[in-house]
Length: 123
Image (cartoon, rainbow, N blue to C red; front, side):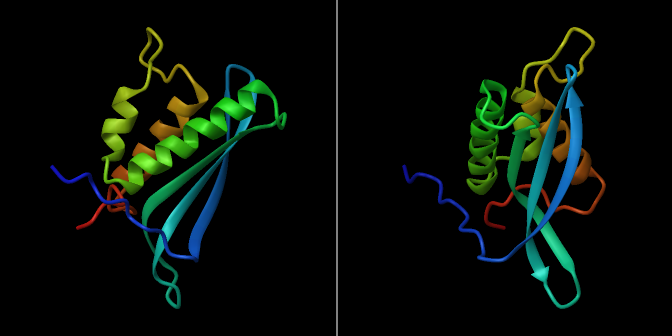
């Protein structure tokens, strides 16, 4: 059985940053997208996630950042964003239990709005 191939990212990607709050802590979520057509500003699927706590190099920041790296690798190996979000721990009310879970939910929101094509895996 052949291991899945990782989608290699282009050198230049579009990037947007969104501020979120979870359990009274502030985080920045960065979404990296493939450029479909740089001249026309068309972007493709989200292929990488960055997550950083407001207080740099704290335990919360390190765990959020490391988790986002793993989430990015899942996307690049073709894991559907909905599967990533579904695997995250939830509170009893159904809301994400962690900042990484919030980032995964945000990823799903962007995927289902029609401005994304799902995972970064081969078509």
